[in-house]
Length: 381
Ligand SMILES: *Cc1c(COP(=O)(O)O)cnc(C)c1O
Image 1 (cartoon, protein in one colour):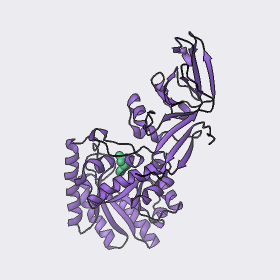
Image 2 (cartoon, protein in one colour):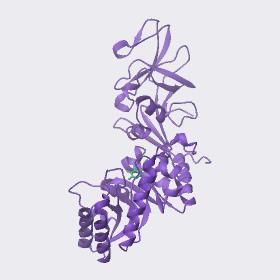
Image 3 (cartoon, protein in one colour):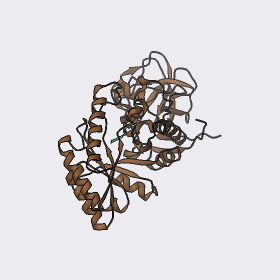
């Protein structure tokens, strides 16, 4: 087998996506809930189209994205399942979304009216999810305006312009199991649901993100909306091992090796100096390819069978690995992060080192110079 040399490549394992969705949709099914796989921001950087396909194969029933453009692109790619989007600009045109049978979130009477008007103009019925703000204070209707919103929605439904599919909300602190806000939000959510019922609506409910899917079966209701866990990154690792497998591996390959003498320094600023003669490996990825420059001096890579330190500054296009006296060769594969089972670093490890969350690491990796290779491991779960 001839190894291919990678400049900067994201290996996306659809087998891992399927396995994760099997876990998540299994938990949902135990509570009688369906599963919406969230594939916003291009599938958290993994590629929305192939992730969506794998997720639907493994037990997801519907898809969720943030923007209308993201939803329309999935329809164009041929997905016919229910597809929800929830974030619009002031001048949004709902007509293409309604024509494409996209479920639309409404957080205000204004949004609802514009959705209903666009549906009426096409002689169609728009599928609407009414969003209540239960404590995140992002979008969603404030509780004071909710009774008016549900009354107007009931009227628009009676007129045939909208079908109120769901009442929904989003949790602020689900990744901190036991946080008092979770029960408070659940309580406010239940109240909003009862008000919708009292207005004559018969919506389903959905509230749970990945963390709540994993830790709060009582909050699964009729539908759950996992995102990050679909990609195998656990938002609540402190809660135990959920059997998730990271789907993204970031890899490159050695483009040059050289010996340097003791006393020679490496990279901009000459921040690192060899204490003895050593072999360096040059890897053609840098901060332009998603390697945070703030990891300079405190990261390692998997190369030639073990973890080895990156020495000196991470540059825009390159970084340098200290290989001691070991044999490394041009063309050798370099794994910057992956699932972690060979001992390579993980996206979670990068995130912890630079003070962020693994969500931000993976969603920021796909860039103009970075390729994506999709594989389907079909390994037993
Ligand atoms: C991103 C998002 C999700 C998924 O959240 P995860 O923490 O990634 O599981 C669910 N619902 C809404 C509204 C979102 O914006």
